Length: 149
Image (cartoon, helix red, strand yellow):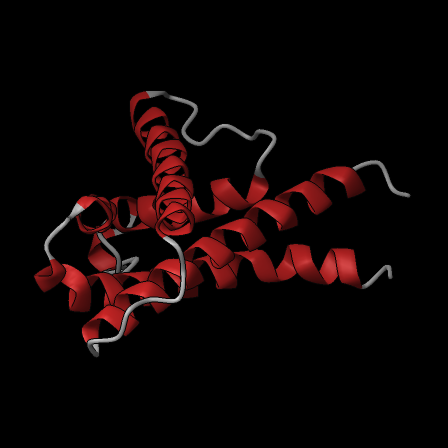
């Protein structure tokens, strides 16, 4: 086992937990949208919401710290979180190139906290974009773990 295999495996596990939470919320909201009762219990939905909100907290804190320190993004224990944070920092550093992460974290947070079913279409769309972002950045870790099996 290589020195950082445990870190890669832990990161993959966190990314899979995020993807599972996104799936639970997406299925629940889409079933509600078509008038069906979600087959996911409320405690699972709330747990999934808490996982996503916790991740957003960590991501927003990393982005905030990188904007206020001269060192920028700190290399740390979670390389995937850093890679995702860089995605949101890139537009500020390269405004002239028009790069955009395509997802507003504040808006995603508001949708996750919303209680009005009128927000469900937007929540479904935002979760789909968020899933794409997480999948994009978790691919290398998954390949590293599964490549050794």
